[in-house]
Length: 572
Image 1 (cartoon, rainbow, N blue to C red):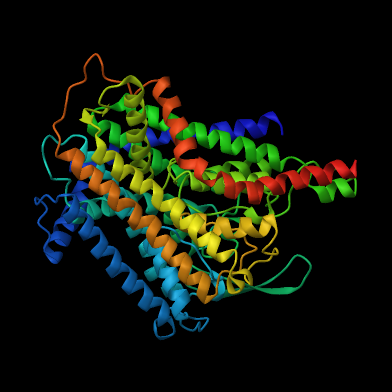
Image 2 (cartoon, rainbow, N blue to C red):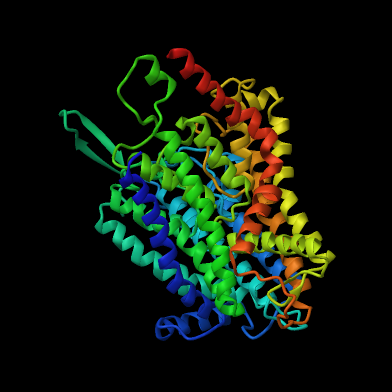
């Protein structure tokens, strides 16, 4: 550890939050249908899309209609992507001649990209054609991200509604977010990545001569375009198996920091946009503070843990003081720690190092960040509505302590809203712990583990897989070989539950809030824009969101951490 490392962590967090402020203001205009500087170009395109698909842009939808539209769109997206993957051998831009995916792998991958998870049970460069990558995966990187932001916009409108049922129009939100936010930003970022050395080509491969004179073949794909939306939309699925540790996806320290900023900037921007739309900017800043504090804490713990020599180094009395296993030398420990906190705090899942090679404490922190609900700042859109669920529970707890009906941003929080909030929260631990418990005793499931199933690390691999799938994160402990029917099927189900079973209660809560009157703040209203509220939300996130997982963590990464300490102590 050194001051430069700490400075890099602080700078990356600070610049990400700072860039999110103007982006949040722009996003608020898009949510509200306001004018943007792209209107002269995109307004005709927007109107043409509404006319083509028969969308009435002025029609409002209640929470149920909005949710059903979202589900219908997601199911149709799943079917299209599944068919592309199954029959890619019959489709163009397949110079490698890849066969179609098996039914279980196509199911898992289609679910993964429709739910914004981007879990990859396969080796991308050896499995998917350029057509599948572009028309299948990259397009869904846009669409799944737009769905998340659209849902956040709908929940936001619930806090400004006054005895109303309308939460906007899903089809309008989906179109505007894709056209005015994701598409232009991705084009600019992709061009930047090409300029910084990322390939963008339909050439299948390039033959080259290495530094030692040997011949080698480099597999090529249109990487820059997918990399741009992969991080911006908190998707995370890579063109190459090594993901953003691969030099084609992340060639330098400059691309590394751009990708880190991409991962979190839209998540924070959604919160700032929420504050503008609801006219509660200070309250939004309090939520951003909660998110940034968790990111800083996670990055700090990982940085500290990864700058301790592992037991193998102690055993040979090596001078090295950093655990560089599974890390890229061009990034080092500070960039790796920052990336780890950013990718697990968001539902991104892209990696620039191998999480399975981390010290046990670092792997446990990465897993815990996902288990907290992917709200720090979470996936684009989903982080906002997930954090609002925590805020609702926090004001409910505060109301119980002072003996008055809780309010949040002018809306009374009563039993119905709290029940919906808790239902949304409980889906994730039920999926993670339930699937993990079954997999831990099934011989077919245990065959996929690199570590023995009865060891703490074996449990960590299982627990991380279902945590990542349910949290719609997509990162993994690489010791798990998940491309098998059991794992593809159960992880796919976990992804569905994490995306849709979690958001439907949130939308029902939004519908209940929209139907209530908007109340003015009074002298007895609990303030939700100061340090006290920040501390309360932090406590709720840790206790309600995290305490459920402590027993499982204690049997996995925590006990493995103490085993490492014991091993080091014995070597002295």
